[in-house]
Image (cartoon, rainbow, N blue to C red; front, side):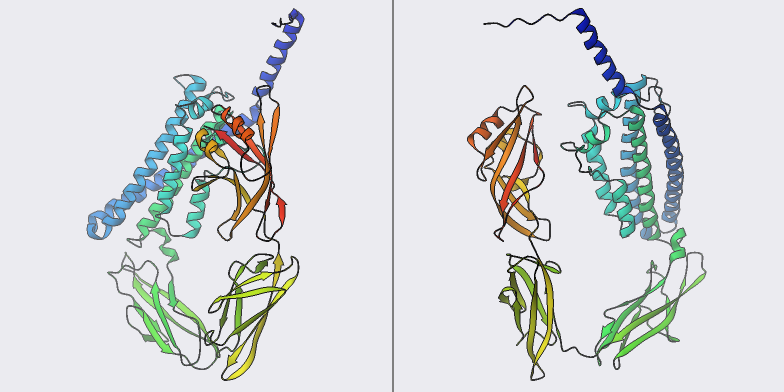
Amino acid sequence: MSVKKRPVSPRQKMINLMYIVLMAMLALNVSSDVLKGFTMIGESLKRTTGNAMKENQALYADFAEAMKGNPAKVKPWYDKAMEVKRMSDSLYNFAGELRMAIAREADGKDADPDNLQNKEDLEGSNRVMLAPARGKGKQLFDAINSFRNRILALVTDPRQKAIIASNLSTDVPRNENTVGKNWQQYMFEEMPSVAAVTMLAKLQSDVRKAENEVVHTLLANIDLKDIRVNQLNAYVSAEATTLYPGEQFRSKIFMAAVDTTQRPEIYVNGRRIAADGSYNFTVGGPGQYSFSGYILMPNAAGDVIRRNFTQKYNVIAPPTGATVAADLMNVLYAGFDNPISVTAAGGNAGVHLTMTGGSLVQRGPGKYTARPAKVGEHVTFTVSGTVNGKAQNMGQFTFQVRKLPDPTAFIQVGADRFRGGRIAKGSIIGAHGLGAAIDDGLLNIPFRVLSFETVFADRMGNFRPEPSAGANFTENQRNLMRELRRGQRFYISKVRAIGPDGIARNLNGSLEVIVN
């Protein structure tokens, strides 16, 4: 029996049309002040990028001059600098091509990305960056990651590394507005064209700044001409600064960025020592001591630079105590075998360890596993042993006891742990079910999943929950997975798991699965 559609009155059609127009106007109502702000930011970025490019050109010119003067010495650093230039130019030009493509989508073939007319256009960035098959977003994502990783391999300064990694990060913040989104969707989906070209301009600026940092470092390695030579200092590298009486103090005294073809003059307490910086002596009784001196070194201009240094060191009496350390951190977890290490002066032979508030098992010399009984209580370790033929209490050590943190749920797909996102339909159907574990790099603790729930959306938009009373997918859940089409998704939530401590817990959050 067929069902006839109820006719819609002309008045109702007009109301529906007005509603659609209103929604479109609301979606496009981007503040003109906000759009103007993006334009001002873009102009500032253009000036910053231009200045960085001029400085980079000057650095490459310095490299070329250095190559003429001493090719054998300079060539390894010059080759690395040229590789940095090629990488930087490639990503910079690619970002420029994407800016032009988005501008043309918004303003036509004569568009200028630095002077957009249709700033509020929402389709340009979608078509260029996110269009199926031909969208360039994933290609840009991969290019940024490759550039960042290769650039960071040439940087040794932790501060520089942190700045470059932060500026070129492709991490997506985790919140309710980014669930299920990849980087390119987070950056360009429904983004006004002026905002998209401004973000690409910022990427170009970050590329040139990263290039500048690396080329500066490479140039500093071959000569002292770099302006950062002003930070040149003398250093003492000691094998140890805390010693026992009768031990020998061993160190190297050197100047940072010293040219190996130039031998410095090193003076300690007024006496010149070997040019390789070796300086050794036997320390006396317990106490705090220091020695000082200076280094003379000619720079590239022929001027002699003097840098003073002072090195402190301590001499302590032989210890008679012991140390107990939790191998994971300064807390213990209840119901779990926590690894414990004991170190005693003179070695661990004859050392005995006891524990209150739980059980203790020795695993080897100085190695134990401690299993606290209750959360919130303290456990105390007592170390005893024989020192110089006498039985002694070598110390007590108290630790807090906490509950194991909640694990993270995952789907075991072959040897991999899938924690959400896109996955091939065959892979998810072939998976047995859920697992859970704490595997944050510090702990690696498996949990057993007791139950969970999947939620699918039907064709009418209604959500259908489907529970499982164990860790495996039910047949109903698998049938619903088989019905999913490419791009559709379902959610796994209400996961309940139990750990080695015997405590069952409900895991927060949900796992989103998108079928490829």
